[in-house]
Image 1: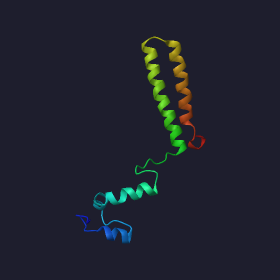
Image 2: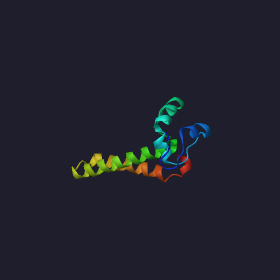
Image 3: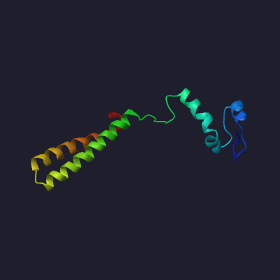
Image 4: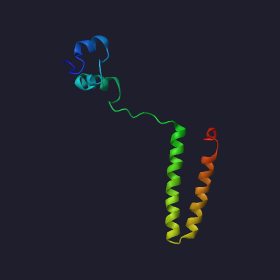
Length: 103
């Protein structure tokens, strides 16, 4: 097996432990994928999200949901619900305005 782009061979990969070019990953995928399956839990990288970023995203998503609910409550003249949504929106906005070290 030889990479069409750089001419790197399977023996060279085994000898050096690295590829010669990006195309090698496609060329030698049948060789590399079983190795990755054995070394790792899978071949798809899921990554990690910092806890504070996850909390901020959750708050941001909740804020968007509340704003949508507020708009709907006003349109349907449910003013008590709208006031409750408004109050919760204001509380979340205060959290967003806190210094980053507080979150």
